[in-house]
Image (cartoon, rainbow, N blue to C red; front, side, top):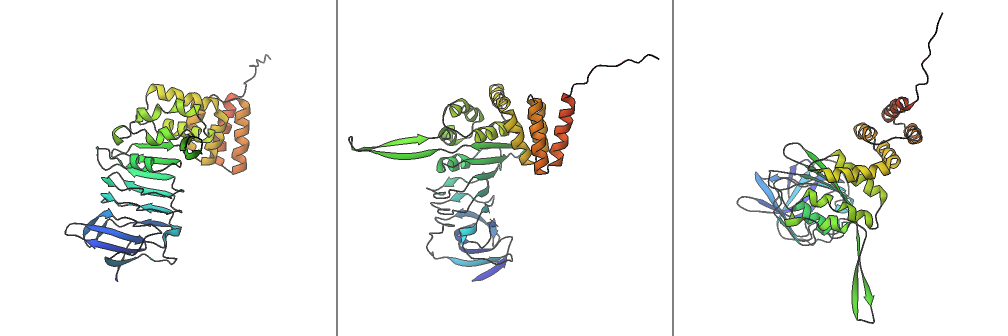
Length: 323
């Protein structure tokens, strides 16, 4: 087995072609790992079927050991965060099947072909970082959302530096046996279905995303999820139209205290300032927020809140003194 040094620990089974490399199997002992984009001066363009799956069987290929240091079990059971290279063009069937610890995936929007059920049983996957590689939008996000039912928190970085953060709420699917009629009834629960499957032409259309909001609120949903969804659309307003801005602000105004307390927990002074500037704050809400900031030791948030509280204090009557 050939051994080389890299930025992460990997046991790879690869196949070299004239102009690219395919990764057939990939096993790491790291909790956070980066797949190489180049091997032997060739771009890595294909991630094979069951490549990172815990159920993968051995395949014939060239064995390669990449060493970065550190020790641990050579198993993807503990893999929590994975970064895919920008050279990747194809991800084949069941590539991540059963990666139950995988929570965060970083990738580039350069993958042209996705196989079947790539993320089956990756139930903890909830954070996606997607980098655009050119002005032409790919279909990777549409594929990932279609493959998953769990909530996804997605950050998209555009080539011009603009950032977008979107929440795709979770939903449930189940079949109920209808014995008298000898068939199964299919049920969908939760309000996230339309978010995961509303990609016209497999493209992210932000107007279509924002138009899901009213329907989502009418269905079973978590208020905390709705709060984050509305906040992130306002915080990163790429493609935000006037009708959507109004609906999200209306929701945050109706949940002002929850929004402020959540933002304090995030330790994000910029976001907190935005909420304080945009939302009406009653004295009781500001007092509660100050107490929460003190409890969490968030001095920066407390300073912002105390300043806002000072501005809300009545100034009293002006006094004139005659001598």
